[in-house]
Image (cartoon, rainbow, N blue to C red; front, side, top):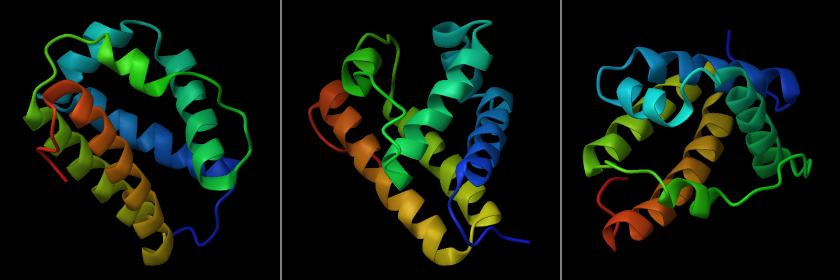
Length: 125
């Protein structure tokens, strides 16, 4: 069954399932472990707040996404490719196509912005 509406529960499912995949991924897992360590619960809560703000306008999230990510070391183009592929797979599995497409459009915009910061251009979409 795919979700056909956005709410905190469905966004929470997306965030948790996506980051389960990230943590298990041989390329992304080490990058995220280096950045997050044992602080996954606060990170997941923050990501639920972020996606709720972006997708539903809840204004739960406050922070500097770009600045926070620019502090990370060792980020490579393949990390973005893998992140986007995992995100797309997770969103498509959990949400009806129209909602999955909305999530993916936002994810691609975020990824593009971060890629400009890291590499001066978009290297993965």
